Amino acid sequence: MVTNILVTGATGNVGREVVRLLSDLDYPVTAAVRNPIESQKSFGSNVRCVLFDFTNPETFTDAFAGINKLF
Ligand SMILES: NC(=O)c1ccc[n+]([C@@H]2O[C@H](COP(=O)([O-])OP(=O)(O)OC[C@H]3O[C@@H](n4cnc5c(N)ncnc54)[C@H](OP(=O)(O)O)[C@@H]3O)[C@@H](O)[C@H]2O)c1
Image 1 (tube, helix red, strand yellow):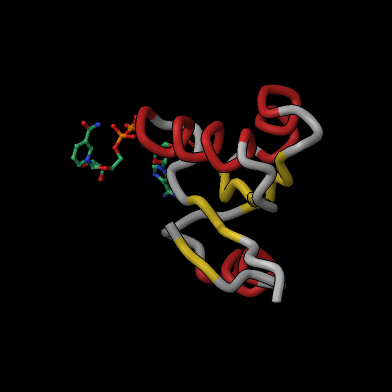
Image 2 (cartoon, helix red, strand yellow):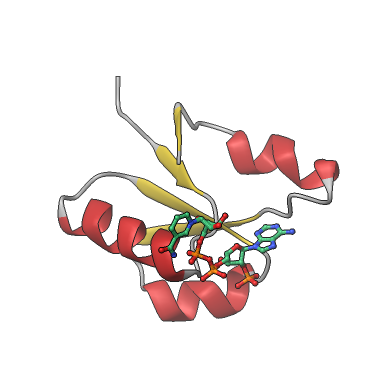
């Protein structure tokens, strides 16, 4: 099974580095972000960005689609 990792806090100090390292290892990595359009420009095409807000449960289902690991 393909490991698809969702990284929360992906634009922050910790999460950005986690995304970069996983992406460099060619892991399918999804960045959980509050602004997917801006973040997509910043992360580039190797990283999928999805809308995720801890304070908005309506964003959870789509963000976790196809995900089997969470950071
Ligand atoms: N940095 C360290 O050395 C360190 C050490 C130990 C523990 N920690 C813990 O690790 C966590 C991350 O640290 P950090 O230094 O990377 O923090 P940070 O640079 O302040 O980044 C915070 C991240 O959380 C996101 N975020 C904030 N509110 C959110 C919400 N409602 N929904 C979704 N995302 C939200 C921010 O996204 P936006 O860009 O949208 O604001 C940003 O990506 C914190 O809990 C911190 O206490 C950090």
